[in-house]
Image 1: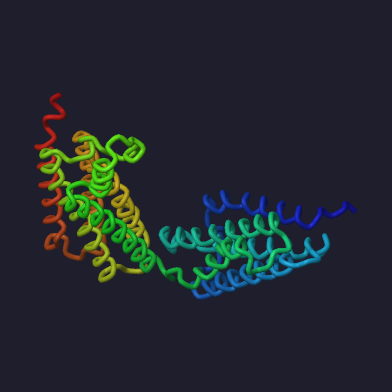
Image 2 (image 1 turned 135 degrees about the vertical axis):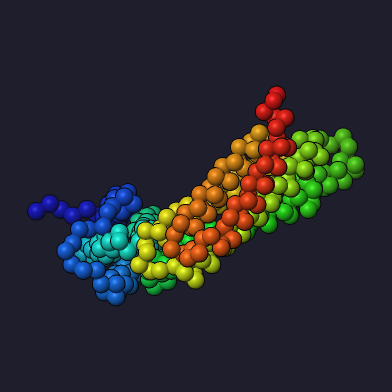
Length: 350
């Protein structure tokens, strides 16, 4: 019979094994089964599996936070229990069929990945710093496995609830981007604080280059009159993006049907593209501004917005598309884009 590896080496090996699971979970498909999906049973099993992982994490931390360390045989038993608990929660995730909704599956998958990765991180800390008190800062900071397990009961229970959660996150991200840009515009210069401090310092110590080294002092960090004119329709476009997401979220909340999982997934997928597109446009607005880049990023955002509006309009969440606000918002978006094209036409002619 082969001798067992030393306890700490077993921890290191288990951490490697768990990390090998991560790419498989990311791309893994739902397990084929002839059994009818039982939602209540699934969520009970997932919650129980999360509690088991949390319990095993606590037990492992306790025995490796004191001397003497467990024997190789005891360590093998503890590692086997951890491995079994992780495999069990992964198996529960795999039992969630696609027809329950891709958005819901993504949320469950994300939490499952966090649990597996959190356990691997905990094993790393125990391997690197054995026989440390559970109050040790390294262990306290490595609480991600317990945090991830506690998230399981908070996961939305159906695809509509999952869609609403994702749409709310998108609204918040666009709202934050809009507020940041508006604040910068109100201050006229996002670097105004730095520049003012620099000017005061340099007036007292004009010959001391170290006082101003590294601070932006050239005109490239200001908006020209042309830049400021172009910012107006860009900001309007960002506001339209926020309004678009808010309206879509309201429609899903009021009219969304739990059994229309594919349409809800389509709405979430295209809506997820709005925030990154807003970020790209917002970043290109900051000085030094390249008008051609602003035009390109505006066009990308407009394309995503119109696609999101069309998908929403054609779905079940818009019962009367001909009477909806969607055509009005599309017109507003087109108006913004036309104005941006007018103001950047010179860039194309250079």
